[in-house]
Length: 82
Image 1 (spheres, rainbow, N blue to C red):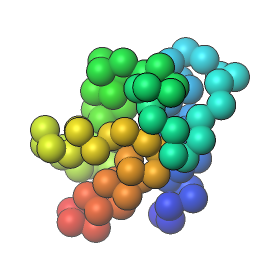
Image 2 (image 1 turned 120 degrees about the vertical axis):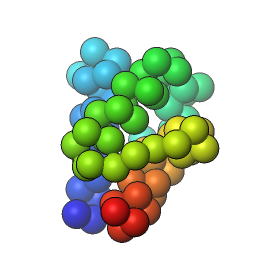
Image 3 (image 1 turned 90 degrees about the horizontal axis):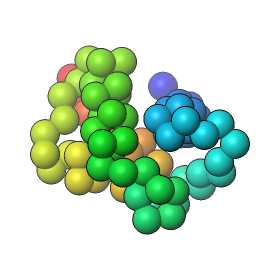
Image 4 (image 1 turned 120 degrees about the horizontal axis):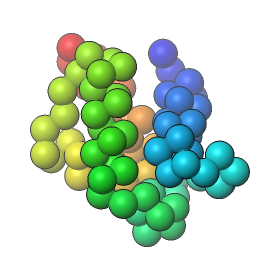
């Protein structure tokens, strides 16, 4: 799985989590400040990624979930470590 594929998956996941299919989310948009995702939404996304990719995030990893690009990089790193 490459970064572009992960960005597509993450975009869909953010839209589903926010229950808004028509929002625009850029790869460098701040998910909380610009997109409006709250901390519970971040946790929901982290949990879904852990389940789907059989990985584990720690607290410092969760703090990296700020943009789609940062989250994709984190996910790629975690997948390569597992």
